[in-house]
Image (cartoon, rainbow over all chains, first blue to last red):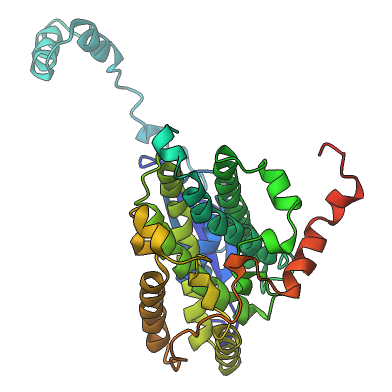
Length: 118
Length: 257
């Protein structure tokens, strides 16, 4: 906590519409969370619409140090983890083209499976 | 408007002009804080709020133009003090920030009650505008209520300044509730909920609750005004404000801005 009488810094997050993630847009100083919310509105959204706004005290964020030991970086070859060997696209294409039910797709895959990969 | 409404035209003017002038003058005094608010964030917030109020005033002035008044620019820049209908407390030069917060909180509560009353008016363009205006005003009210609470419990200095601000304002709030004429015409328009005693009582209840919650002594009922801005009786401060406001425009009265 900062010294008494000093404003806290709040990070501001906003959601453009209900399906978006909250995105950080900046920070501001305010005496309390309600004021921070009102200031966020004026500082960042005077001309734009927002679906939802969060203000989070900056000192509540537990952040990683900026070094290789603490941050995920790609080291070893991990291609073996990727599902690139399975190609379902043709199945979905047929499914969409014929307007099949999901049960029909499953049946279709079973029968084609007998004759080997199509 | 149809002819039935037209005959009530002077009633609508008497109703809308004080509202328009209040919004314009409060916004002008508010704009004088630009660059001087207590912090950067409030500087943005307060100027934005005052721009909102100027927008509201413009909406009302445009309605007045429909009712036969000159165009908004002339109404704003061309009137001598005695033709303004704003409350006297709003034209007064600014006090410190705490007094400004107290004034704006008092005004926003009053404006909220007045808009509630106006929302029952039977003139569709006014009703439509008020619906939009109230969305912004409810936020203005919340903003100054938050500031009011914050100063009341912040530090001994913030509390002392807030109480001093309230004391400085209280005796001069009277004509806020006045319409500059007897209330009978409001009843004729079906708007007696806007009459001076009704609004004043509702305002004193709400502000009284706020002061009590903050532990600030109730100063007593707002005294009747000694002079009435709604009748064009203004202080020297309004002339000074108008001098500043029209300074650029007066350099060339024929210019197209």
